[in-house]
Image 1 (cartoon, rainbow, N blue to C red):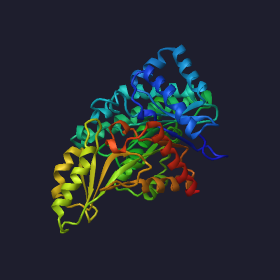
Image 2: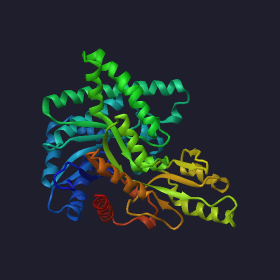
Image 3: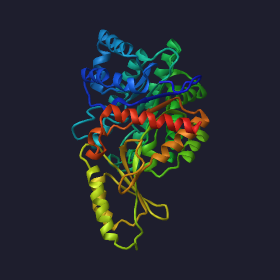
Image 4: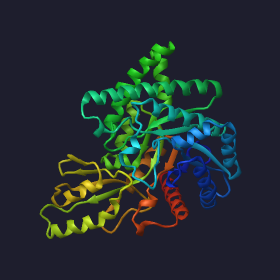
Length: 414
C-alpha cells in the first residue's frame, strides 16, 4: 500500500508466511488471510501483497490463460494488488525440511532463469498502472557447494549470463508496455553473495562487465546501452536480517551501494537474533553459557537454515552453517556476540536472554527514506510456524502488529 501521499513508496508483507505450494493453496491463503489483514491495516484503501509463488504454482498460472485471469480477479475482488514477488524459494518452503534445498536450483542452471521469467510474466499481468514491479531472487549459489575458486567463478559467470538474458527480456517488455520490472539479488549468509563487498564485486566485475558483453554480442547493443539495461533491471534486494547477521552497518552498506551505482529493488524488513556473550573471565561463565544454550535450543529447529556469525573483540568473524552446529561450541566460544539468521517478529526487540536486530531495521528505513532510494518495502517474517511457542500469536494479529511497528518507525524517521 502507498504509505505516504505524493510518493511511490509501497509497503507490504510477504505471503511466504502462509504455507502453500500449489496455486489452489495460494488462492486460499489470499482469500483467508489477506482480507483479514487488510481490515486491520488498510480498510479504506487498496492493499499491496508480496506474493510468493513456487515454480509449481507459477507453471499452473502461465499454462492457463483463464486461470491467470481468475487469479487477477481475486485481487480486484478483495481490494488487493500485487507489486512484488518473492522468487527466492523455487520449491517447497514449509512443513518439511528446507535447509540448503532453498538454494536449488541455483543460478548455474536454466531452471532458475526459466522460473524467474515465469514470475516476471505473471507480475506483468498483475501490476496496476503506474506501479513498478520487483522480484527478489537467490544470491547465485551456496558456498559450501562450491569448494574451489574456479567453481565459484564459474557460478558467478553463469549467473551473470542468465541475469543478463532476463534483463534484456524485461527491457523489451518495458519498451512494449511501459511496465518497469526489476530483479533484486538477495545476499544471504554463506551464499556466494553474502555481504556488501561481494555484492559490489558481482555487479561490477561480473554483471556489468561479462553480462554486458553478452548483451553486446547477442543483441548488437553498445556497451553503454547494455550496462544501462542491466543497471535498470537487475538490482539489489536488501534484507535487513541478512546484513545484520553479517555485522554490517546499514548506513555504511547502503552508502557503499550508492557509491558503486548498485540500485535497490526492494528492502525486506526482517529481524535476526542478536546474542551478546559474557566476557571470558566472567564469574559463573559455565553456568551462564549453559543457560544461554537452553534458551537458544528452541530456535534450533529442523526446517530452515539458521546460520550463525560470531564476532570476536578484534572484529574477526567466525561462521557456523546452522544453529544446531553452533550450539555445542558455545561453551568454548570466545566471541563477544553472535548473530543468528532467524527471522523473528520485527516488533520484538528483546527476549529473556538475548535481543533482536530491530535497531538495524530502523536505521535502514531512516537511510532509504532520506535518500528516496528504494520503491518497495516488504515485511518478511516467514518463520511464524516454527517460532518457539511463547512467541506465537494469532497470525493475522502478528502481521498487523508488524505493520503497525514499521509504519510507526517510518513516521518517526520522517
